[in-house]
Image (cartoon, helix red, strand yellow):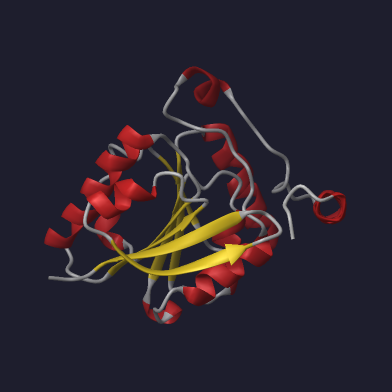
Length: 207
């Protein structure tokens, strides 16, 4: 079914409105798109658009790890929906990293109101030095090609600190070639025909 059909668009907008009203009633804020000063003024850093919770749960289920023994981080976590889903999926440790302090304040508020324990990290992904703590990484195009290349190099280098299989779920993979050029092995794909999107699952195996 085409992403551009009236039925699909109406269904997606209806779902958005239901989620938005439900969030407001609970004092939460996940759904609204956000583009702040950082995103407007730094070409390589992109604005916030929420990953659908149902899509995220399917992605997490597709990653072949034991959540109770694994640590998850969302790079470009925004308001925290993916952290919420990772906690609900039983991950031992959950964190999100973002360069925008305003978005992280919203994420912290969301986690607090939900009674969830997630670390919200204010940092530039290029300078972050704790990649070795995590096993599963999620990306929804938080930045452009050159930053992706450098961040993937840092993630790979983290194996020198802690050897493990590194798993990446990459939603809407417009820079898929960057992962493949960096030596990440494509293991699986999920397709959503109603959104014309794909999630790719990559592994950088322990050596």
